[in-house]
Length: 468
Ligand SMILES: [Ca+2]
Ligand SMILES: [Ca+2]
Image (cartoon, rainbow, N blue to C red):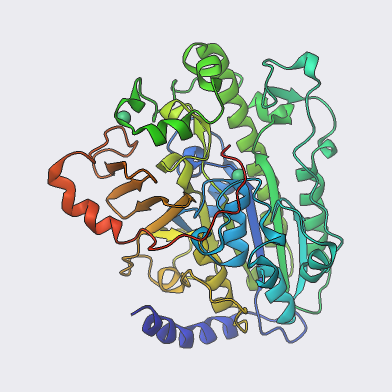
């Protein structure tokens, strides 16, 4: 079914692309601006938490198709990004967790990444910031990027004596110059790239480090929340929410030891402060991305550049007694995602179908008419949804975090199956925050059996790594 749809839409692509203006030279293929944010959840992007300020991405959404239900394939930076850039599921590669160091192991050395494929197809590639977030052999990095790759790292860091907690995340305004942040210098370098003349089509991958910890940002982003009164605790928090969660789920929630006990439920003042830090870094990331999109829109490439925005995973701020990600609940799995194809009549709309970050790679191959990579991509081109956001799309979204540890989301339910056979089931139609685990209700046996069909039959041996 999907293949037929793929073919039927291939014809309309040619029409769309040929309508795009040229830039003084023959440029048959569109450019791509591939923008990622790190650990951004739905609060501001989908306006699920009133008060979170995101003016730039809100403006971008008006010119793109927003995916309301986009999911990562793994709820952590390294495996999620390994999956995005390879186009393969974690259960195919064995890259499930942070610290698994995938790019030099297993099947990864023979995988063609997104930038490598663009390069082979005649594009100039330009990469900065947090993209793969795992060591690459220097020759591999050279094979990906035409520029001198610079990532930048998580800093700057607040000196220990000024921190509000003994933990590194903190929530303190940065009083130094903006340029202390790699997000600022990397965005600036990307803007400079966009302001230059390029003979070949280009693929830009800019990975912004925020809102990921540490919650430092230029002071003006903290000032946005100085007098703001926002609902507290977060809307998805409920006391004793873990009471109906199996032991394996509780273990994932407690991956940071007593962090939530210390800086959440027993210390609401600190919880609120750290939450404000997350809001500030979210607004900072919004600006870092937004200024690049504004520069694109002012440039000669505005009408011939596809823009993709994605976050590698979601984020808990106390929901399910947990900070950060690395769980299989909606809060970790749901990610901001939007795609702008110039001239699309659905720009400004929202698509409610379930999509996966795994679908980004095949979507780019499709729109840019690239000769396919060596590996067989496991996602689907999103073109049918970009051309008709309401079209039928009945594939559930799969997120895994280790061998035999899966979460399956369809348009109504989330189902989680842990390695010991314990389960969770949530009905999003009546329970969007996943408060009530329905897995033990025999009336749901049929639903569970149906969703279990989407659990992989086999899992590649884990490359290891850490749980948090
Ligand atoms: Ca991340
Ligand atoms: Ca519960």
